[in-house]
Amino acid sequence: MMTAPVMNSPVLQNRPVNLFSDLLVHHMGANLADGVSQGQAGPDEFRSTPLWGVGQRLFFLHDGRTSDLLQAIQAHQSAAGVGAGGISYPPSEANLVVNSFNMLSTSDQQAILDFLRSL
Image 1 (cartoon, helix red, strand yellow):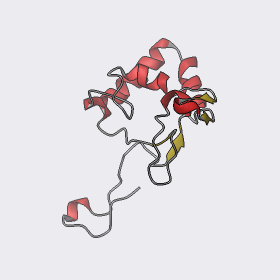
Image 2 (cartoon, helix red, strand yellow):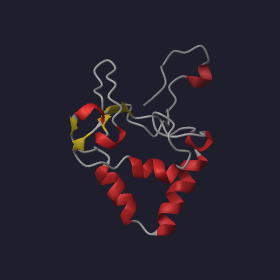
Image 3 (cartoon, one colour):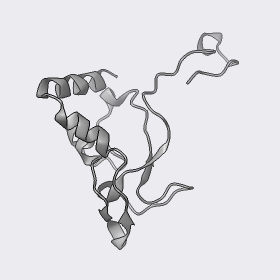
Image 4 (tube, one colour):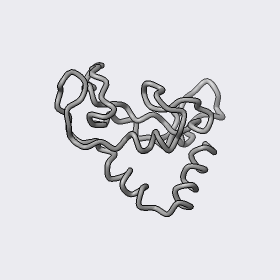
């Protein structure tokens, strides 16, 4: 992703934007579903938040339910199931990534957490 070719400041024109995000809406499964639909996003769908600045955040997830980055990663794992209001949800699209993270060595997991905290 690049900044616009014409901006108020020439320094910011045509520069890469390192969001570490796809800015898309993803199914996160029953565990994170809040039952709220906004626009075309369903009750278990959330827009990928840019990771830029994640190291300065005090709370994580859409509702701020944790201050622990590792817990936030683990919370993205969710099988298909029934969530709030008895609604059935598909599995989280993040399951593959969370499983891959969990298979890493403890030191590699820590390296990823350290990287995220540096953003």
